[in-house]
Amino acid sequence: MPTAIITGASRGLGLALTRTLSAAGWHVVADARHETDLTGATAGLDRVTAIAGDVTDPAHRADLIAAADRLGGLDLLVNNAGALGPSPLPAVATLPVEALRQVFETNVLAPLALTQLALPLLRAGRGVVIDITSDAAAEAYPGWGGYGSSKAALEHLNRVLGVEEETVTAWQIDPGDLRTRMHQDAFPGEDISDRPLPESVAPGLLGLLAQRPPSGRHRLADWIPSPAEPVGAGR
Image (cartoon, rainbow, N blue to C red):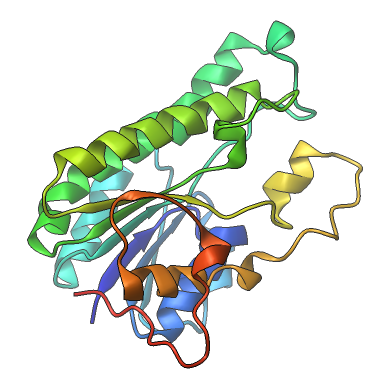
């Protein structure tokens, strides 16, 4: 059975992707900061190993890699855990530098460090690194300077990884605007019920894994398989 690590798996897109891979027969090492939230969210899912901790902690990152190694290797790393920064979203002129530093620590440095640890296993299995990004990485939206710049940095690291690694595929995945807690935090007090739920786009991961396009940027919704299509099964 193929194995994935998914960070930020206690809610939102991370949980939807965990459920999708579990149902497709994958082993999933699921990460989130709060143990109660993580174990509660993943209870009842088959082949899910829940390991709570902060992805900015080197010891926790090592624990995630060790868990995948014990399961026989690593086929997929999904760097999904992220930080929005201050809410309401501040303008660049008033963006606290320390808050931006914390956003970059979670959104850029931690995924990079986890990817570096994972590469030996991913190379052995011709695996995939997915960095979850946002259209805020490419478009200039008022208030999104901090989060968007962190995702732009993450995207560029992933693009370069894709041209450097001969046996590892690197995808920057834009899930679109979804009805998640982070998105609500970005728009406090506003009604975001018109946004689709993460579960509506999560099957796109199976389409990507089945078709295995080259390294690059993709919208998750574009890869949702039709009922007749096979689903991705890793190695």
